[in-house]
Length: 101
Length: 269
Image: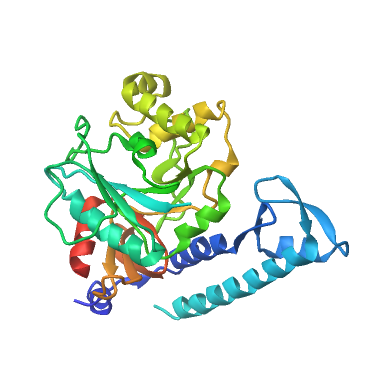
């Protein structure tokens, strides 16, 4: 029996809250990037922080709470690329799941 | 620098862990492109076409029982001495590798890491497990990644010490249930080696995802390396159970219920 028939026979309801939690679980870990001796999260806060400086070098606190001296532009570029790629996939899968009943 | 995975599989009266291990090993080869070493015993290892990287036969300690029968889970500390690799992932056989995500751990860790947080699919608000009401939060031995260093040797030696003196640690920490758990042994070993402190760098920076009780996993197709699953759950509302489901893809998960795991792999075969 395929899963579509199984779902129909069981009159199962799609659980949007659990699906959202699953997507958050799956994609938030993909936002983590190891670079320049630190572990970074490619989130809005970190990208905004790096963007707010103009200096070449910067000491930033990584996700392990260690201060790491980084080449700002290089890290920013990597985080922006990661953010864009991951969020596009996240959005794509969310749209797919959102339409389920 | 060699990398590989070690699985431990000892058949019990109720479950054929070898079959589960072979299913998992094939997925490790496919998704992670890593060789797999099996630690097993003479009785569990069948005639097989599957090409293991190494098969190491040991005499297991069978002295552990759960409500459903014998549970041969002791001896995980041997991974340190038995591994043929410079960098090793020790996986529970019931961990479904469904993506290449685990490879990212090699870029993130110092010399040891494991999960310290777990989430349940279909029950995202389940509290984190503790050794007891007043003791530490449990870490999970389901996935352990390590390099051979003095510190990781101490961690595994310490796990051995806790296993061999489990009653003593059970008395001190008032464990919930008296069956031997690798998770508890690892929790205490990590604490002891780290001077009774927590070291954030020892934790995989994402959660272990469990499929728990009353939850069923159905592969969306019969492809051996299928990545799409439907997860169905019996939700209780207004005095009756109602089926709820989600679909997942490209995400690893750990199946707690062995019967469910066997059903799932039989559905795929």
